[in-house]
Length: 156
View 1 (cartoon, rainbow, N blue to C red):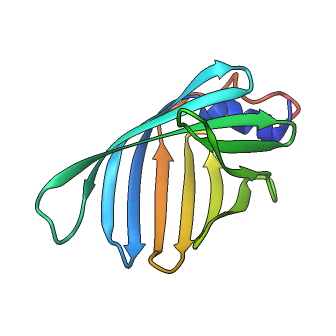
View 2: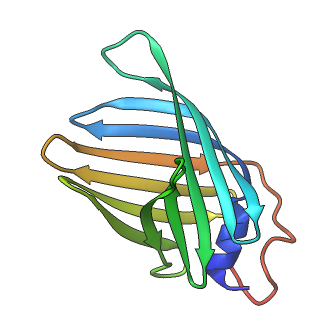
């Protein structure tokens, strides 16, 4: 199995999330995300978080959902809607990082994936546009034992 295939398999399951949003908008969030296997090359991702804005006492709930599809040496990400909408596609640039761009005019989303370990990765969205100027950084962690996840021919 390829390295991107191993990363795709490692995503499966439940993750703890810590998110910080900086820029014009400021917030922190925490919660859980889960990658559910729909088929060997399709994952459905759902997250539930509580969000805190510094100037507001009330804590808000937030949910997101995406579809992840493995295609050869790349992963495509779609917004999980009635009619799934393409978000972006990424390939590994070196052994454990990837970056991609998504244009949603007038906004541009530059996304970086940093796969630090089988139980830890980060997704950073830098968003720029007429009304938007912020960075969202999400750390995904979990307790995970991976002795049978990586193929013998691939080293992390």
